[in-house]
Length: 251
Image (cartoon, rainbow, N blue to C red; front, side, top):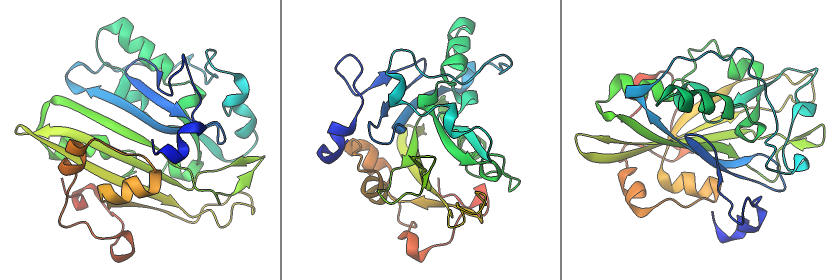
């Protein structure tokens, strides 16, 4: 994290990195959402596990008032949206996969998303990014590392005393034919009508540069990841069109 935001991190055992099974994250003190979540995928050992009887809960290791809970989501159209996808985490030996399945439901891994964003009928490019990677690229050993989270803008709209993120980001890192690659994406929501029954006009997904990702998130990535994310075809967001399909992605 940039030095300007390091003091905003909730500490767990004197570190801002809070560990879970197959993912970790850093929680913002002021916003009470994760600033970033990082997770690994081992596609060769994925288990298809049910979410039956799993409930959203606050992480008992952390102060309750440092996390946004059900008080934000009850009685409206806001969904509890996983940052680290549950299906990405349920890999490895069965007990380990089951623990990851359960860990994914901590509110620290959840952000508010409009129901028609999280349950999109547009074939959900955002929700399918990891799937699209495996469909279109010969990912070495079916393993990838993913980073993601909300973009915490100071002017995000307030609802029930909570500033709702209007943008989300994701970075996929993987090896293809022995070469490290990284691809960054941004999802933007139009929340202009938030006060009018939380209606959502549209959301758009863009492929962005590593420089833009760092600028928007105030996060800094290792130099080898930044080099792996260099793309010649990706223009500034003001000069390009949103992704209409996964085939538009430059892998």
